[in-house]
Image (tube, rainbow over all chains, first blue to last red; front, side, top):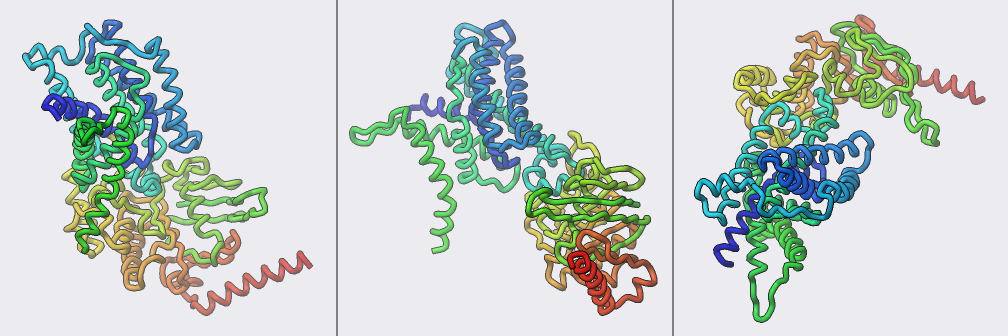
Length: 295
Length: 264
């Protein structure tokens, strides 16, 4: 793996790490497996791209993307809590609906972001080389999101979100409407995913309706790798682990794609297979470790 | 202060499994009443508590707590008036949160929650004092996760959490049934101290007739969704387990006789 490939992988890891933090919130904290993210990631990208090409400030476009993601997540959560649709199914319904909505937003399957202002401009203006600008901006955003989510979960409201995933009966008997909390949590999660999508689009120079495919798998892979490698003893640590897991995941993929054994090379289309193997490895590694130690 | 008027609840209504779980229960508890509730399996004890707490809505009847008609209130809204301890020690607390975090959640029962710190440093002093009352040494373990505690410790903590904000009604649903004898005696002692000491209006379900007689100032026996026996003050104090069993069989016998009359 070349130095630039490694930098690229870390950069990807950071920006998709924001998505992984969102996935951690639903998947682990709220115990709400949410596939909406496959639609809300391109939703964020689409909103941001259209906003920028219409002349809006790129930072403001991130805010719009975030709000769009929150709304998408709330739809899923409302389908589940008010209309009793199974959470997985509810999220799939929102996801496929978002496919059409995203094409409507972009008035086509994609929007190019070439020669328009992006969130990287101020950083480049400060003298950071263009190929490191992504790394710097994403590190700042990922750090802010991480700090924000850890702060939030320590508040009265955040503690209720934690308890809702842990013991809904208990928190209801303490006077909390768990349905509202699930709407809030799934909304917040998808807001982060959309933010991640908006940043990705600005970095790669285009928003594309297909860019969300496999988001949930990448998110889960990051979460599970993070938990296995870095542990999840405290809440703060678990979220840091999700972010770091995302970086490890992208590095592992870059490594695998650069691998050459004899005449054999992986194709980018082998990515899904590699991801599946990575997740399986991360899932069984703790078990294997325990068995080896016991012997 | 709680009034129940003609509570009726069917489960699986209209199907072959139809069960009349509450059959017109009328009940009024005075402020500070400590009522023990007994009855065989399926008598409607837990259903009665669930009806009060708002786990489901009634088919008919009216529930008022502290002068407020709560019949149509959802469970989480009723929680501002009601404290609950469940049979399963795992249900009353949050395992992945610390002791102080659990207490902080309970300290806001029924109140709006905002973006202030979940556990405030000024609360810790109070938490420590309250935990010390339990006599289990938990006051030195504020930052331990509740998942590390034993069932008895968790149940004691739940007792504290349910009563941290004075409830208008405290519902105890066989809250010692899942514990070993020594621990359950300890939890009962704590219950007695909290309920009698705080003059809390309490409905305590138990399977143990001896406990039902020893504790509280009033005893209810439920059978097939109705109140079979309702003993207050002196009548309850004189009661023995033997008499209670006899009363139970007599009441049941009458019912059987009535049934055979109807069917015959």
